[in-house]
Length: 318
Image (cartoon, rainbow, N blue to C red):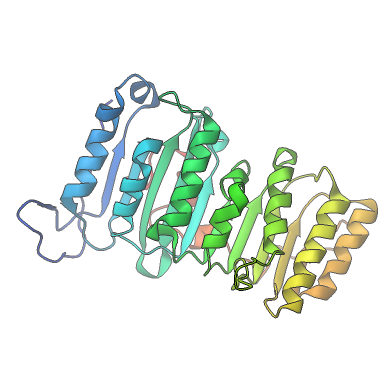
């Protein structure tokens, strides 16, 4: 299946140079290659089309861009090019295991809700003789260094993807200085990564007493059975206490976890350390929706649904 791109009506764009392609009415653009094809193509061939198109097209405002899959070796250059198209404030990292048939990709969706703009790219894991951990390191480096991520204020990390924001001294979290909201979906397998994230959120860097994610005010943990629930609650208590003591408090905490016994009792006590607290307590009737919680579905541009991001084509073509 050959890669394709599409164009529809959109606002006009500033004049382009003679060497650039201009599509003044372009609204949605995608380059999608079948996984079975990309594994069999030489690296130079697999990366040539998206690299050439992104480098030569002048995209008009509000154009949605999707590249899949992106080779890890091309990630830095193409992500930096995307940073010239959009300054996203909201990001979701979608785990490969959620894609149809377990497609073996990690997908990043970045949007600017106020402008209905968005870019998305997927990375093929483990292809071209690169092991998964090497790819993860490349992802972390790119996220920490590229201007595409510098203005992120909201981050949703889906189940299975937490290792992408931890490891290597959690450079990703340390680089997200504007982050206000963090939602982490976890399974029991993700526990080590979650413990590392919480440790970083309660740490003060040695140089200049810089605080990790100084603007963070909301933390949401969703959907798993903790292997060590008492340890998890103790870490959360430390995060809240340390940040309160340094006047960088978390004001909102949402826990949608399967807790029982002493862990549940301890979790209830966390509510005294924050202004707004939500816990899926089996003994308390919970509201249908937390009024202060943030939802990715409210951030994606018109015509794109959150569930569309775990499919092979995003945004939805109409």
